Length: 167
Image (cartoon, rainbow, N blue to C red; front, side):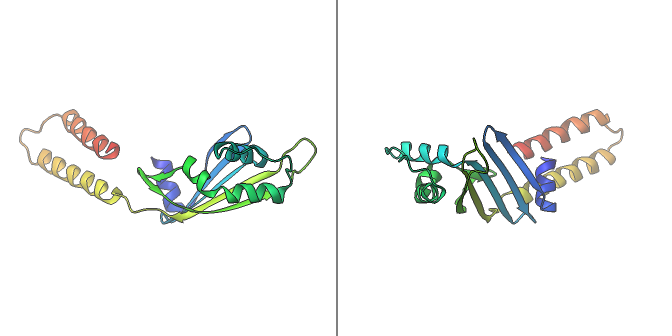
């Protein structure tokens, strides 16, 4: 949670994961826009996209041919990949690029760059609910005589905060 908040406020880059030959990184700009970059083996991606469309990949694995296959499979890629913010799916602009292999034994790399606006969520309402609950409980507690144990106040506020965060 704090990592996401830092990323949204500072425009930081966060690496989502790295599995095998796939690398995903995301950048959130002022909490308004996002830029997600996915880099993977272009031949393997083209094979998977062709197979899910019921076709076989041709033996021609030149970068320009792989680019044509991958970019031409945009809707197929979108059906298999979902980007969501607070449970709200988005339809990003996607640019596709394929670069040649960098050395013997390496594969051409496919880079998909997904960009768009972060949808408005109910983040502000959740924060307002938490602030209102804290103000009400602390005001009530401080005006009580005798005051209930502080542990009771902490327990109540913890449940309220966790409920708002998990909603």
